Image 1: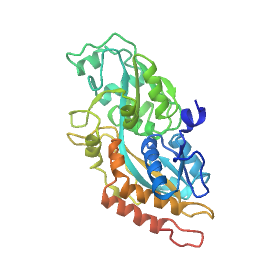
Image 2: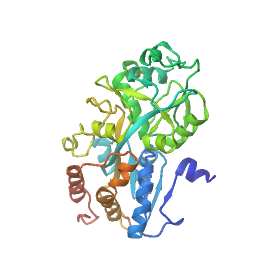
Image 3: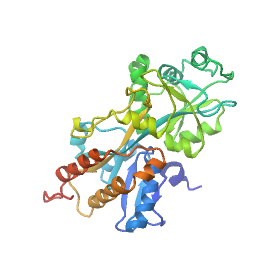
Image 4: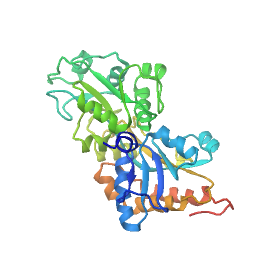
Length: 343
């Protein structure tokens, strides 16, 4: 097993095994990896330009683009205006999707049990330790819950998926908000750790009684059992493109010049409560020999020709009006060393 590329790197070397001189390099989000991989293959076939993407977690992506070792970084935690300014970066959302709780519990199948944010937070706080706990049973009348210890699985690396997940828990549980907080990495009260979405998924699949959180494409591709969630409006919702789209509809991308938006715990009867976006980070001043124009071309292609592929993996495409806003920001925000626009 190619340890770095599969366990940690998950490198997308589009179609060919070697990156060409004109290939784009990126690093970061494992949340976005499944669709980046799909786009990379199609884009290579269409243009001859490949994408070498290392899915090392959002924290790693932020570090790599900050040190300019890749052409773009990808993070599921949007950076604040101050952070972007200090690093000389701009950001834009590339895709939206959902984070889902996944479980491995004998006799329980996908969508058979439901949780709410309060109970999910208590599980991750270590306050609820058994699957037949009264709080879980109260949410699942008629379901025979096993007398099984809960093994909490969480991320080992700095992760945007963790940011989305912990941001949600902080909105629905005051103890989580005050004791743990949210971020790409937190001081977890409980659990075993896996690297990347793939690492968390692997642990959950191997440990009976486990619960973890992954981007929905990982759960779907691995045929993992997921829970339903009770959303902000008190409705029981299953993860799907439609429920992610319902939550994403509340995004107000125009309110912030840096596209800062967090989509957790949005209102709406059909909204999935743990929805988020993946953001692309690029330098505001392009370095000589870099491939920022090629990055723009790749994501322009993805916005206009890759959205059916995104839907096939249950991601939510960026709306057309937002794509126009994004491409307008490319013109105004990113320049070459001489001050000329690159788009």
